[in-house]
Length: 124
Image 1 (cartoon, one colour):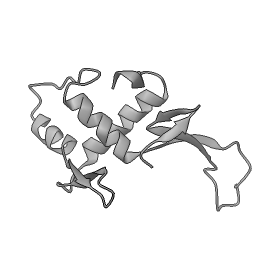
Image 2 (tube, rainbow, N blue to C red; image 1 turned 60 degrees about the vertical axis):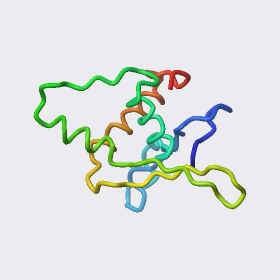
Image 3 (cartoon, one colour; image 1 turned 45 degrees about the horizontal axis):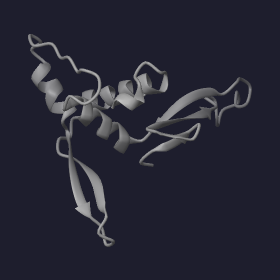
């Protein structure tokens, strides 16, 4: 989904409940755990905005030898805008590098910060 409705507000995440023992003999014996489901598209949009200087400041160390690889993985996706049959602009994210672990980790941390209230969604 491009977004979820959380208390009537469009957010890049929603909460869900999961039984960690589903499919085993211990199923339904403990309280379910809350998990965060997030929109990859919305996370990519917000991460790109932060990297462009919109919203909170993104600070990266300059002297780290792995910083180049980190930046390459943060930018593993490229945004394309295409008109659909109705003439509306559709956004499509295309992965241009196969290695994206640090980029995925950054997006999960970003969504977690939004969901827990550490990052104000109105600022990005």
